[in-house]
Length: 115
Length: 115
Length: 115
Length: 115
Image (tube, rainbow over all chains, first blue to last red; front, side, top):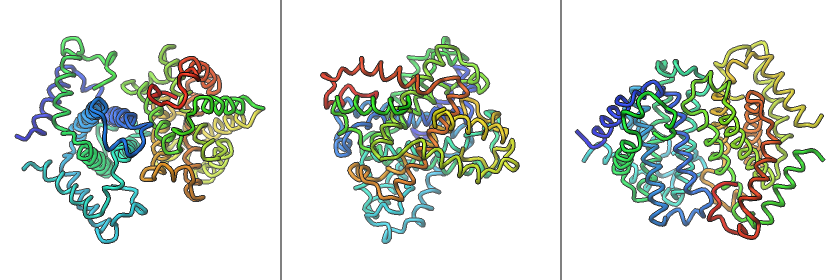
């Protein structure tokens, strides 16, 4: 059992013990995920781009906590939908490799609106 | 090496081969993550909450692809920041367990603005 | 001079008096707008859809404050970009009227991903 | 009747003619607003901050269309909630003036997480 599997089990138990399944419709979880993603964005809001590459410890800790929230809601959503996040990401990686061949995509973000 | 580790390696190689590191400041990646989270939200936008619990295959596939995008940007951001996403999530789980004791939190979302 | 014009003038003066123009790049303002939109979303996060139609006074006040923030950042962004928000909205209304003819669109959200 | 009032009337008629009131719960509208704010954010996603101050015409037009969408959903939400967006913004401006006195706030974004 990987750490990710253990995390998903713990999250399922956490939700069940609190009777929170009723709140955790995929629609609500997608909202919560979006809210957490915005809280993560807020950490970088007025920061010059270069500064975001060398965060102070307190700022890095704040970012880290929001990253945790995004991941936890993503895993909850995957559980509700019956989606395997790793399989989905592997599939997308394969599709991105075809969509953005390394030779053509090098150093340009012009056609680069997705990963 | 777990599947998650392999995914992170593949993602690093993918970015390096395309010289995309320059675009991948944490500030930009947090924006991209937020945009993908909103695309995931869009899947559920006008849907009655109950329907979101039983998606049609095409809608589930669309949600799955956006979940992949969110996860991939989250992993890219973690790499840039030097954050271990599993460790961050495990820490947050421990903190949530203290913040929302099972007995008190059961079935209520009143004080429940975070996970 | 309309109330909207007065608001835009006041906002310009407010920003100038604080030397905040330097922070107010369109990129940063679009981030701030997105963050405020998510704070507005958070008000409705775990709420059954029907309840969102009859908010309690304190919740309505919270929503109202986030609405204000969204509008203020939207106006700041318009100022920076030289976009007239009313003209843009009037144009979009005309385009939506063509895109969604009343007879065809009635009561269906199927093709309804935009307004 | 101001242009803003006319826009709100036109929007109300547009929604009524299509029987879209049923979809326009405040919860759904807040989601739609958030999705549009993210589409606006996407325009600036990989752009250096300086470039966002001098958009090419096509990019400015794209931003302008997303601004329109944000404004239209904001007005729809205000209608559903019975919130006057100008009054809300005026109130927030007054509160911001107290919260960020010009002398103290000048040129600093340190304590500046809200407008």
